[in-house]
Image 1: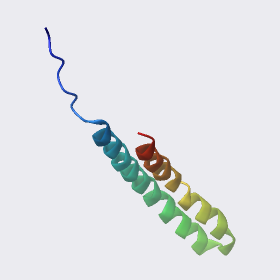
Image 2: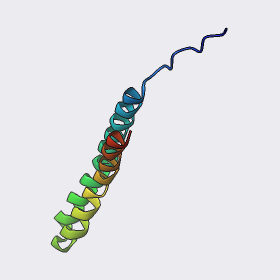
Image 3: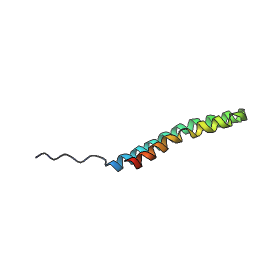
Image 4: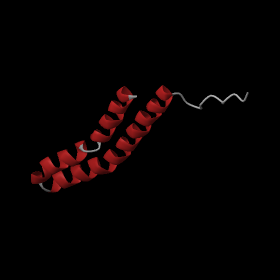
Length: 72
């Protein structure tokens, strides 16, 4: 009888990896968006709301990844 090898990562480990990679991607995206938004706001104060929305938009990625942890 052939015994199957254990998986490299458990379900909890894969969920943690997904959240960690999503957090890194969110930080990477916000780095560029945040600096661009600050520059746009410095030039014209009317860009505050669009800059705020675009800065907060990548946060949805980490929220979705965090929800995935509870689904698994």
